[in-house]
Image (cartoon, rainbow, N blue to C red; front, side, top):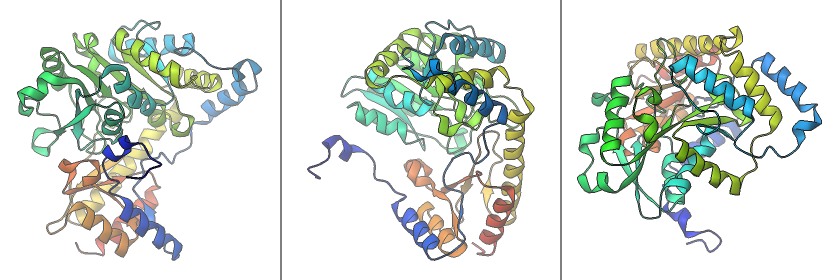
Length: 388
């Protein structure tokens, strides 16, 4: 063990993309034109009307002080109004809305607020790595809930062993899902809430991609009548408004859970820059602005170009109904690491091996559609020339 590092770091899963990263850097250093479909970082700029509001707010010295507390009251009130309009769910802005320094920060701190060392946390597999790392940092035990295509990439709660069900304190969910792009409908969320209530566990639903949909709007877990008794839902401005670097999000739902999370946060951070909060308020008030809808339109065109192109190359993949990812089945004879390595080496295109999101992700690779449509079409053309 490295004497300079805490032992808890050894409990984190290995970073399985190290070799892919090494090969990508090597290809770039050699002068190759690498198309990176690996990182889920929105490439589209934040709409200009939001940037203008930030600039205006930042010039006001009143925003330069510590933004202590659970978030600006006017922003929390606007979130409650939006939630009522969008989902038909009533929220108390004083107790059921909490502003975050991005949804990842809130998800990462949640187990510290809710889970005692040694308890079990249910983590989706494949899934966003922060769920497992946050569990480990809290001294709890992650238990993988395998997601599978034949079950709609939804957790099979009946397959969780009885001792695990009894010990589980918290369940992480993520719909629309990264990396699989699956969407959970309201009946599916109802079944999960009923299961969690039966075994007295709490739910954290990560809805970061909830507004990045293409056909029908995904539901909120809080639309399930009993959900607010046990659940909180995390939302992000990063994807909806292309504000990834601004670091602002929010959590809504059960007041006691949010109070516990706020207590952790008050000891670890001092809140989000008030000018960013005011810009987020301006964004949410104009969520139907043409510039915001235009972001979805761009991702939809990229999705269509990628999916149709990859199918012509012989790949199997479902058309994503949400997110800016695509989840592709590996051709026969390849595992996910081998396929990603081959495509990087011979086509100079970066894809993420599915196994990096958990054992159940084996057999798939993820593409992030966060480059121009022209580059996506070129990437598909290069992959097609490999005749995999």
